[in-house]
Length: 409
Image 1 (tube, rainbow, N blue to C red):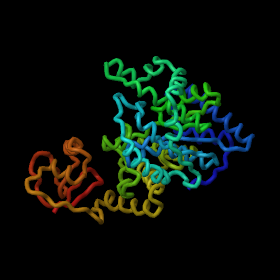
Image 2 (cartoon, one colour; image 1 turned 60 degrees about the vertical axis):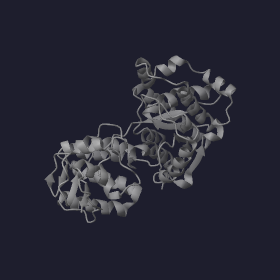
Image 3 (cartoon, helix red, strand yellow; image 1 turned 90 degrees about the horizontal axis):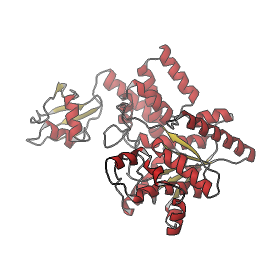
Image 4 (cartoon, rainbow, N blue to C red; image 1 turned 135 degrees about the vertical axis):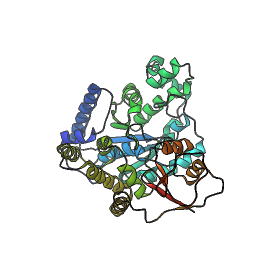
């Protein structure tokens, strides 16, 4: 778990701003400057900073992209600061519109409670449970009156919200924008106020909520505004698009360690830098050294990626599992062997290639199955399967991509 690191204030700022992105270099410099001042102030007062990040429990399982902000919270823990893991059981009733170009589906209280039960447990793969405070924003948001809402909303204009890309796009397309969606930024700002936060961590899509709304609201309510650290978005295994379960480019943190290792090895070389900055325990100096070795040719990209895969698998499954996963990867993919254990699927008469891919779960959807077939990435006993609608040929080892196998019986 988190061990306290000893760093100078400048080193701390560099470490804590690693991976932060504001879309504007001046804003980043301003936030870094404020963070340094706040760290110096806390040092003088011999107190830790109060850090938090909110998580709306919109799904039961977390993938690597969800852990980017948790890794930042963990870094604050390493430096001895107080961390609150805020479960947005009340904000989930609205649904955060920040990264959406359409209305986000609202969850029921039962769905929210069920998902929330798994979030904290999964977060402890990254955070130190003994140094993490769990709070729920229903504690205070559920008690706000209509008068309170009017008082809070009086600090903002409709134009401020409509200037945001997601709302502006919907407005220009004549798509509906519901009034309750505007409340989300107010609610998040009020969370920061109630937690008396020094620093609020979030993704880049949270920039308005954190750097504008929360700071404005805290100032209006008589508190020092929190410093916003908004993190870059982690791309999926394609190295391009935001990691997402619906796109099938995600890496589950509770999945099989061998699968996790293989998926990390499948990311493009160009994505290694952002993965190193966002989801590893490495310091800026360690990452710079790795990148320098790569640019000089002192280390091969595959060797660097294997080191990255070992690090990430170790975080979630331990060093022993990472070692086993690497051994399996080398045996299967570098020595062209088959996995030691292969699940079986009993073929049903009349099933097409597409039916089998969907039924076995080797692809996330029928559309993804078609894409894999088009990319010549589907094989039966090393023979390419090129027609998704033809009847499945018969028994053998079915392979999708480089890492997924199942025995058809």
